[in-house]
Amino acid sequence: VAYNEKEDTIQELERRISRLEGVLHLEEMITTSGGKIFATNGKKADFHTMLEKCQEAGGSIATPRNKSENDAILYFVKRYNTYAYLGIKESLIPSKFQFLDGTKLSYTNWHSKEPSGKGEE
Image (cartoon, rainbow, N blue to C red; front, side, top):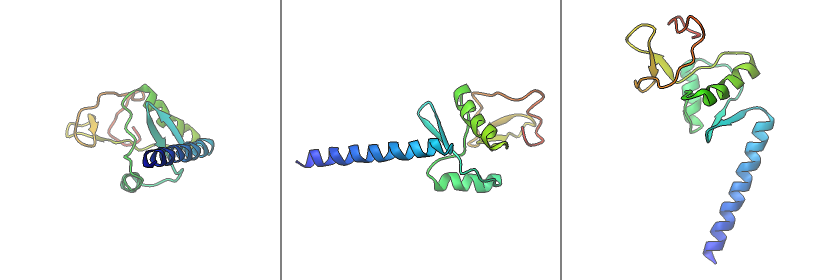
């Protein structure tokens, strides 16, 4: 009996999560790629505030690791007609970038003449 109750609870939670994700998709506040959920609240903030908000939500700042994830981030850039912060920083070598944890980038898709190291890469 206890097993069935746990299974019913899990199924109910899965239904609730699915409905919530559906609402967020309709509101164009989330998109998915490769099992990851990319989300925004649509508000502008500085980089450090964005890092903090992402951590408070249990996630991390978006870091594209392939074309599909880059497209998911680009979806919000186009939707809100703005730029997006990424989990990437300039290394000690000018105009060379790395992940926030210091590891080498495994995927890049820079605009022509970028990165310049002047911001808005």
